Figure 1 (spheres, rainbow, N blue to C red):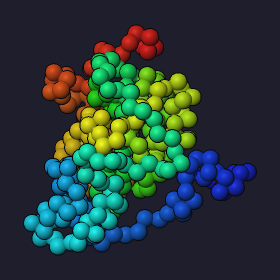
Figure 2: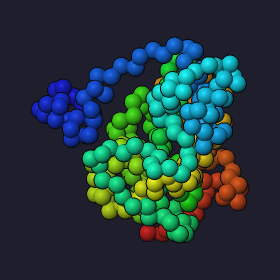
Figure 3: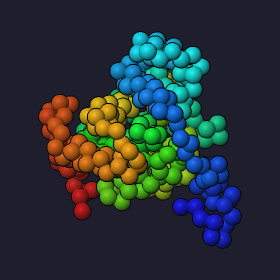
Length: 275
């Protein structure tokens, strides 16, 4: 997306795309094997006890033979994008210069495809590092519409996932996210506005506002990621592609009366959205 051969200076390209220049030159540093083990364990503890903060996660690590200071645990959690889920002033850390949007889904009946989409980012461990996974889900059907992997938490891989979802499935009425800087950035919100999509953001301390995609992460990790040790991003992409195909087309959901996400999506898609 960014190229030195373009007429615009790299600095200007980064500003337009809302990317920091440091991310352009970023090269992932090799992480010690024991640190990767700890990070994977933190991720598992967080999925089991999403309300645990750095102190309690540190206690769990101690029970598993790892003695880390609270500061070290907190530092690793920050690197992974992991935070305790409980009522507090703010769940995510939005960019101070970005506009925040109100939560539009309270009390709303969501029973049609493309009525509401949701997006979120999670941490995925590799055998020799880690990457971030972003996914866009249709709220009513739980269908995963698009996803991307990235070794940095910038905005570009989120916009790429958004572009793909819109190209393949049209536009939702409402797009819901947390207040993370990737989703409040001008380039991301402008894309939504250009397509006439209403923007909704989780309320303060309201992790349940995006609960279905939080449940998706638990399924992805326990049914796929933790069963394998991906050697590279290429391997992770290949295996996750197979998993999401399984998730959409073969995995029945109790929350959908044992129906498939793909089945529910196409059956509840309004006729005006069917080509």
